[in-house]
Image (cartoon, rainbow, N blue to C red; front, side):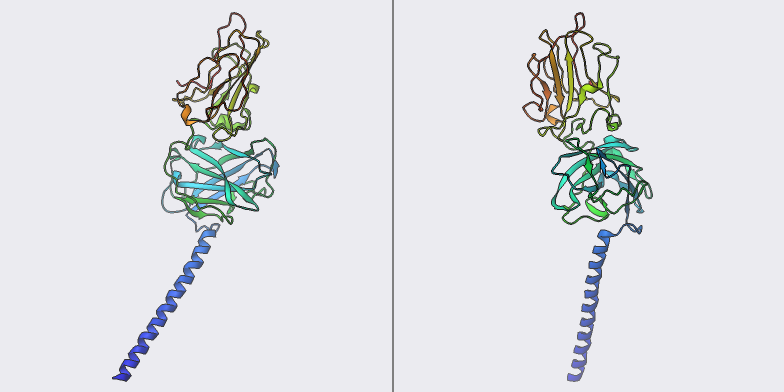
Length: 369
């Protein structure tokens, strides 16, 4: 009887040892799978593939990362659940902004946010987070977003030094998989290798516009930036509306940096006159498509019979400015719609009167239809 119990005990002990060994092996294999999964990509096993190319040298006024998302899974992927991260290092604490240059998805469906790394790495102190609105649609299995052209630049307009940027690779002038750009679905890393100290991604919810954006954040280098046209804007240089013919100048439109503005930049229209047609310069930024229906009048300036001077209107993306129209301003007041109760940064400047016989003109951002 005791011998039988002894054999039974040994048998259960042996079985328990086998279970522990198997369980231990399972834990070890799971740990290896997790480590490999975070870095696996180029072998085609990832359900998402991100390809990258660039057409700029290491030193350039604007960086141009072109990204492409490919659904390599057997399930459809809603693009509003997808986020990408492009990592770079700052140059002497400069401020940065980004915009969309070209995409088949429409630039209005692509969001860009520049964020600082909570734990900066040598080649990654910041990252450009690229997201999508619900209007971007869904990628079917095997479908590609096609190329998404982006621009990254310094707010002080100095050249970028991309040589030490983690995601920058001048050798990739044609699209190729890049594990230095990370891709997420619902906040889960599915592509690429994060730098040490990268913050956890969050699951983005469906949206129709970037959070806090009224109609544009004015992230453009200047009025000649091709992204201006890509995002539905055009500088007026001729007739076709009220005002004095042959006095419209694209050079009077700029996008200066402003710390008080949401997004860090404002749209500035500068108007000057000495009381003659020849000495008058006007500015207007026109919406190419009638897509802005509410809150798109940023500022209005009435010329009055005052000494000659300069009138400046600035505006920034501000949710509280919706449907806000400024009243006619005095000769010493700057007409501004900004992200704070104070002006968006331009000092008060005098307005002046147009040439005799010409009706007063209102310098505005695009009107709502």
